[in-house]
Image 1 (cartoon, rainbow, N blue to C red):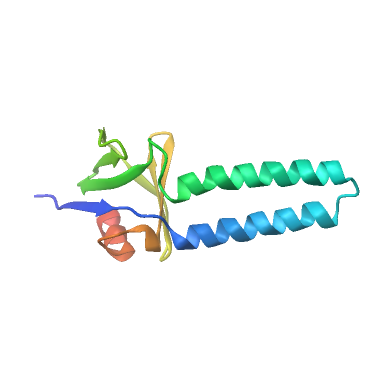
Image 2: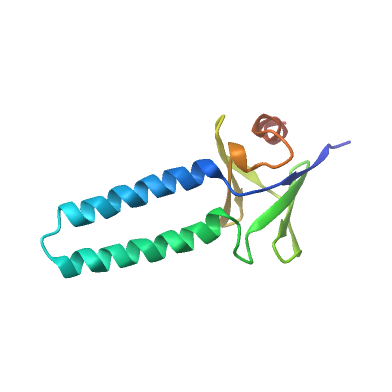
Amino acid sequence: MTERTTFALQGSKIYLGISTLVHLCTLLSAWFFSFNVYVSLTLSGILIAHFQYLNNTIFLRKNNTIHAFTLEGKTLIAIDKTGTQQQYPCVYCAYQSSFLVIINLGKQPLVIFKDSLANHSLSQLNRLLNA
């Protein structure tokens, strides 16, 4: 008998902090090392637009983002924002650590930070993936 566990996902504060830091460093370097104001304004606009796009991904606001998933053996059932379910028969873990897990779902990776699991711990997910 295989264990069936459902994990709910939420926005990650770690991922938000890392992306904010990277965007701020890039923005500062665009203004410190550029000698043209128009290039700096263009790069700033592109960075701000990219950060807004990234915020939709971080806070799980896009329609195709996975909000919950169920593990049953080697099968993963993903539930997205609209409520549709997709079943992935063969999933494998591409990377595991104490802060981050990356699961390959075909060509789409599912990135899970430690603080993005709403109802379980990342160590329980690591244990189920290694079983």
